[in-house]
Length: 275
Ligand SMILES: Nc1ncnc2c1ncn2[C@@H]1O[C@H](COP(=O)(O)OP(=O)(O)O)[C@@H](O)[C@H]1O
Ligand SMILES: [Mg+2]
Image (cartoon, helix red, strand yellow):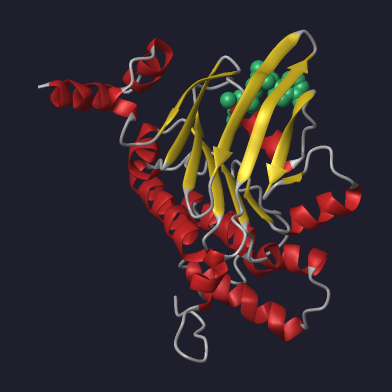
């Protein structure tokens, strides 16, 4: 992507990265549904410009934690900070302001089936950026579709798209407001391995290009070892490990080893590392 240049050739994005760091910090997040404690005092920091991962087996509370972070679920206890501003218990104006800075790729892409690709991507602009003219919105939509490799697909309906294309439209919609924070819940679910890699690469590159604070929920070990710059491992609602793709294969936590070993390929890779 060509990026805007300042008068003396400096790149504006470099200036942007000197500004306040758009870190997300969670402190002691707990959530109980009925009798079941789903999240038990989870804390962690997700840094700007990094692909941060929340990983763990199915049903372990990853999506609930992500929903607590974006404000779709209110935690029973604990706090969520966006660049030092408390979000989960903030007032309505604070929440509205932060929500404008969030882009979200929902599990399964969650496109509106009755709208074509262009209308799906334009939706957040129409909802939140009323000061933009129609032609400005149109060019922003075209730019985002082109960024995800879908130029010219504007008039296609979701039913005409493959699983990978739907995720790309979901990503285009997530970045259309130029978000500071990007959240993706299981971006690879339902995709073949090759398409999964392409979607991971796209999320990772967009994180670097836009310098977003990105949080990806996944149980895909391939994503973990390729793009996990910060990894939080959840097991039965507790944070049992945190680290990076460089350290995860050397960890000695039973629950994490079992999670990694659930995949035969990973087991073989670890055996090779030992030798
Ligand atoms: N709104 C809800 N009401 C009651 N239970 C829920 C709700 N949302 C999630 N749960 C339960 O919380 C647990 C963790 O779910 P989830 O976070 O979706 O797991 P995953 O790690 O697979 O994303 C599951 O047992 C699920 O049934
Ligand atoms: Mg989930």
